[in-house]
Image 1 (cartoon, one colour):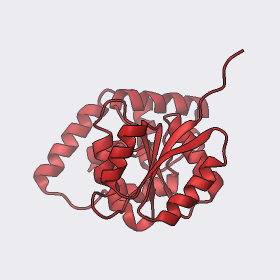
Image 2 (cartoon, helix red, strand yellow):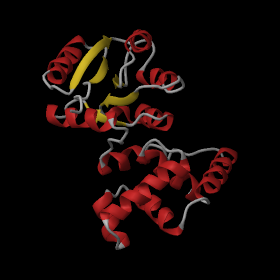
Image 3 (cartoon, rainbow, N blue to C red):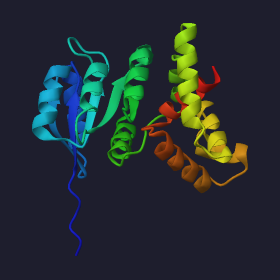
Image 4 (tube, rainbow, N blue to C red):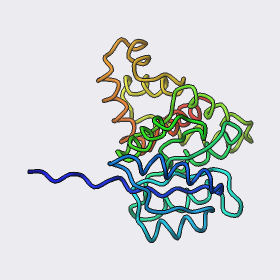
Length: 225
């Protein structure tokens, strides 16, 4: 008989104690999830992650001292890093964008209903991104701030080089992702099945070394700017 899977190990990082308590209460009520540590700032988070080796880190974006963006960047440079799910509000789009560029798998709003937070944790634990199309489009919009001509040209050429490895269908899928479409919408637009969209998206992650859909979308936007 196959043994049961161990619960997903989670570290909660937020500077508000009530938020940490609420998340622990919700998460520990699930048999397949468990909170193994908490931290109120980035420095403490790094120490807890080193000690507990969690599968997932729920990371607040804005904290005193080392913020969630800096902490995420540090975590994701380490061997076998945990998967990072950002906790944020819409007014933190700039920091969320940086975290997604660094490789965080997604983010949820702090006022998200508990069942959806639990679903997001499970999804990220499996290595899948958690980014709704509407929020993806908004985050991508935060990346459109003007750049210097030199920086813009360098970004465009680098992005075009990476995208040149794609097939025509993969490139069409990448452009649809950049438009904020979800898989069923992409399937309808390209007249293909959802399963085929998923296959193309998987190829995009592999060929572009992308951790999430936003990284794919940003490459497309950089290439077309």
